[in-house]
Image 1 (cartoon, rainbow, N blue to C red):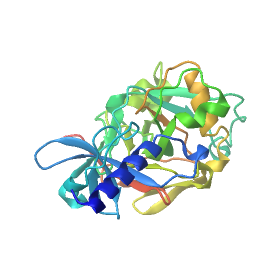
Image 2: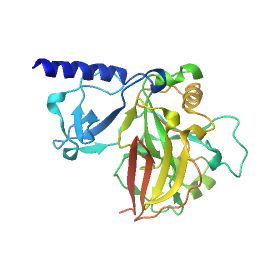
Image 3: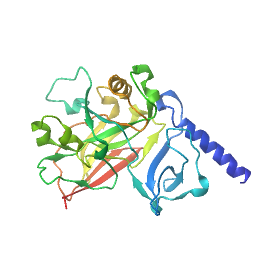
Image 4: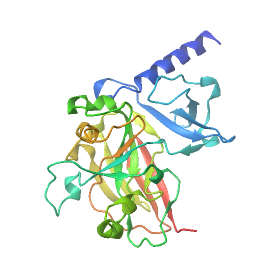
Length: 284
């Protein structure tokens, strides 16, 4: 190994270590982590560099790891998977003033559960269940947990956040209104698109979320307008549910939503972070 390569590897190992520290607690490099499948079927984690190069890493992104520079490959040579294999998928409701125009402002955080099986990748189809009549998009910022969090205080919650990414809390409104709980309406297979990668080292309050359907903007709001911000959400959820590295929290959707149908394409963009894009298809 050349001296230059050793230096690069050492630098990237250090970057990997820094990636587990929350953005609010340090000046940090802005990193993009992907989970991908190679042509031989192997599933790995890596870093996206220069926009179109994947550098595999030796472990999970929120743990100390090495960057395997000698194994780097073009993004076009792999298939991106959902950058998450969570145990817990939590979502927050009614968390933007623009989404609560017909109801009082919340006085405490309202949370509900999605299921790990709802999580799909950018590019994967959102399959409309055969008996679904009123399926809606909900563009959101999604938190990725990087350290175990149990009963953490608000002022310490940010250190448990690894990064963020776009997400779509797909919701069947008729089921949501009529079922005993929101489980079917919110947690059915494919109802939780996320990705295409996790971004770290960003100022959350400088972000915004934009949702487009077939290129038309349907939602747009700034993260700073959340009733309850990221530290408050993580702290609150952790009082009741132990959050584990890799768990996800959907932070709430802004504005209004409307029905989607087969043939539509839904995009959720967090400018400067990523664009999540999923076609809507009918069941086979």
